[in-house]
Amino acid sequence: MKPASIQLPISAPRASLMRDPRLRGLFYQAVLLAIVIGVGVEFALNAKANLEAQRIATGFGFLDNTAGFGVNQALIPYQESDSYGRVFLVGLLNTLLVAVLGIAFATVIGFGVGIARLSSNWLLAKLAGAYVEVIRNQPLLFQILFWYLAVLGAMPPPRQSVGIGFQPILLWLADGAGALRYLGLPNTIGDGLRFAADWIGPPMIYLNNRGMVLPEPALHAGASMVGIALIAAIVATIALRIWARRRQTATGRPFPMLAVGIALIVGLPVLAAFVTGSPFAFERPVLRGFNFSSGIRLIPELVALLIALSTYTAAFIAEIVRAGIEAVAKGQTEAAQALGLSRAQALRFVVIPQAMRVIIPPLTSQYLNLTKNSSLAVGIGYPDLFAVFAGTTLNQTGQAIEILGITMAVYLVLSLATSAAMNAYNARIALKER
Image (tube, one colour):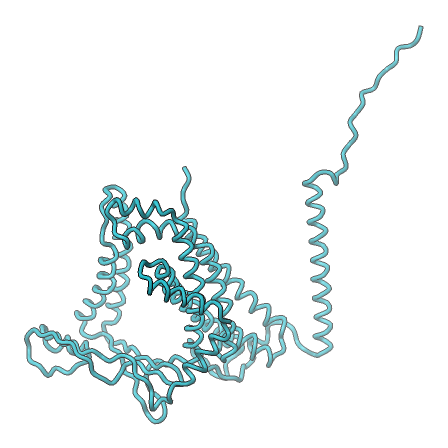
């Protein structure tokens, strides 16, 4: 009799760990991280050895050293005896000034031109199209140099400045001398009610080969009340906007928010200015010798850079706006017109709000491009961060690694902050799925 055979359970062969996608991915990432760290350590050691061989000190202590050079535009007090850290702040503020103003101007111009490209007026549409094709197909540096050398550089000297705008005479004598003092006019007419408008000189704005000279505001007693009135008007406008939106959602009745908001923001501070009796005025620029001794002077580098950056970026924004509007189905416009809305109302209340969901992502890229393109200011000598810190400061100190690292970090933070703000706005206007 044969003994019974015992059959052991057969276990499945164990799979190799490298066949697990999750573990394999972690392994490859760890290897890549080790390679990156190794290359970084090798780069740091090599850079340290080279700097020691050239007797160049490392670290950020150079920021406390005296700069010893001047800057032709500073939004904060600056002297040649200040430190390199102060130079960094001056350059950063100049860069932020160009970026913020450039984004604002480019947005207004770009939206206007983009809407004009779709106008039913043949001439307006063709002019807008020609603007886009000419501006966006020229190098930005060429346009900066064109405005700086060919336009502003051809302006006359200060003694032959070109005047822009004249001070209007506005006589309102209902309350006697108070209103006249506010407008900077002598009280030569008796009491009573009279309103007149005329144009007198000299101009309030001057253009010459040294830039643009603007009237300088002068604050007097009571100016704080005007500021408080402005803040109150802004808060009231925001609250009114929230109420108007809820009212329209509940009843369908629109509220003239634009007109009321402008009336509040403009009218309330003006009313406060009249009540407090001329709390501020504008001092007209005065020519003394070979230059103006008063007023706010915008250097030609800033003016040329702003015009070039704004018009160049606006050409791309115009195409983005045009594409966003055309992405909205024509049935939306037809439905709006069937409800009795005019073409302008349909564009404002129906088309543009839907088009913004298409416009925002590429518009963010143009804002980032404008901020980074502002570094081309070094081509005309505008003292932005790249020119005075990554340029002059680097040449004087030789701290290449530290200065370039700080400059890269600044542009990275500016780009991330802009992207975060635009992404937050994009999320706010995005369609909410139920």
